[in-house]
Image (cartoon, rainbow, N blue to C red; front, side, top):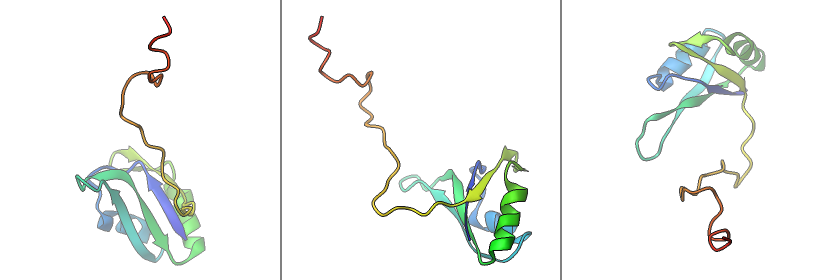
Length: 105
């Protein structure tokens, strides 16, 4: 079972995340997602547990639990659709009106 974990402290490591979930069963992998450029944590990660019952128990007990001073959000990870990316800001500022309203007045 692949589990999504959000609300993590930026200081949490892969090993810390694995240790947290090992209380509920065997953890195949634990990965904190980091920014490509800065290598800093984005505050979320994924845990793979081999036993679905243990994974479900971990989700039920850790969702909304406090860990390292932060409230966790834990759920079954949705499969990533090929080519799907999170929406990005165009970082161009303004109100999103572009040039279309510039000459209106």
